[in-house]
Length: 409
Image (cartoon, rainbow, N blue to C red; front, top):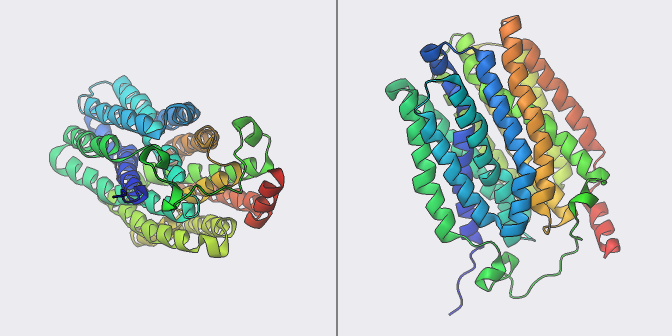
């Protein structure tokens, strides 16, 4: 009897992996206040540690992409998740500032580079061709659910048991839950299970020519997609790392930031599902532009209407346009350049994303320290999103890309 198609199981494991990976890596902002209270470490210094995480993650994206192309996503994802879990367990023991920089800034970042969005996008893309956009959206919903579940959990643990227990519990979650699922339930390719992408009976011939990294780097399509993507990185991590502190500045509780990020994640789940359903009908480019505009509106709102209730409105609007950008850009790059070197190509795009993510995190902390508020940082985020929207307008349409791909065969 033929084994059922394993693609749905692969998507589920990718979903759970992204829950753990994003939930852990994005939780750093929750620890700013307790670390400041415990050790008197300044916000600018803690922001610099997170910027180191962003840069390290970005630098290791092309490295992990190359390893994935060579050894397959399963080995890279499982080993990276182990490293990430161990780094959080070590963080539960910190007494010196350099330890936070090493455990979170370096080790967590290296682990996240190999078990985050890029790695799981490559895995899912190997199992789906026709349904790639829909399945990438479904698996990527794990990023939102991870925030929805683990960020409030981190805030709850910090408030009730202390930051050390919070670090330890989060580390154990990824080691006990995520790692075994990756090791025992997924395979690198459909062919490893005697199957074909999308569960077809035969191998479909792709209309998209698989490109090398060197070819992508001289393509205007790659640079337009990637330069728009950097506005996502700058604003995504500016919000994730500094919204908890901003909420406290406005008189909110230490747990309000986690609640707001949870609301944003819930809104993003809805948006993620809708973009997966609608991308074939309206085109990835058009939906991507709409999401950049929605996030731009959210940042303008945040800059001009500071207040507790306004933060709840922001969380909903921003959440609608937060994580869905990632699978759209991934799908756009995968559709254009194929899957043979997808790890390397996506890894380079993520490197650019993370350089600007680090810049957003650091400038948010620095400008808050020197000016006393986040207003300038939020307006900078709005400017970045405006530029990202304009750049994406010049992206080629899907129909034009398909025509070029067929001509190139």
